[in-house]
Length: 121
Image 1 (cartoon, rainbow, N blue to C red):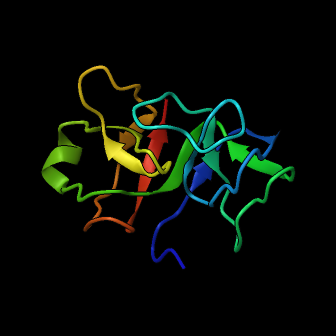
Image 2 (cartoon, rainbow, N blue to C red; image 1 turned 60 degrees about the horizontal axis):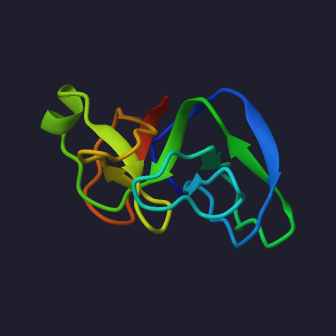
C-alpha cells in the first residue's frame, strides 16, 4: 500500500512486457525495466501485482505518478528541483551529470523502497 500519496496520471499506453515489470517503476522503450540513467517510456501503472513477460503492461507516460525510490530524497532537494532518473532496477534515483531526466520529485523519500510523487517530463 502507498500511504497518503495521490497520482494525477496523464496518458497511459500499453506495451508488451519483455520481462517482469513491477508497478511504480520506470519502464524502457523496449518493454524491459529501464536501465540506470536511461530515459524511460514511463512508469508501470499502479496495480496489485507485476506485469509478466509477454503480457500487455499499462505504462503512464506523463502527469504526476508514484515511483518507488532507490534512495533518500529530502525536502531541501525537492525545493531545489531535484531531477530523477532510473536506477538499474527501474526505481527513481537522483540524476547525476549525463543521466536522462525522467521527472522531478515533488514529495520526499525516507530511503530505498519508499515511494515519491514524480512530475514526469
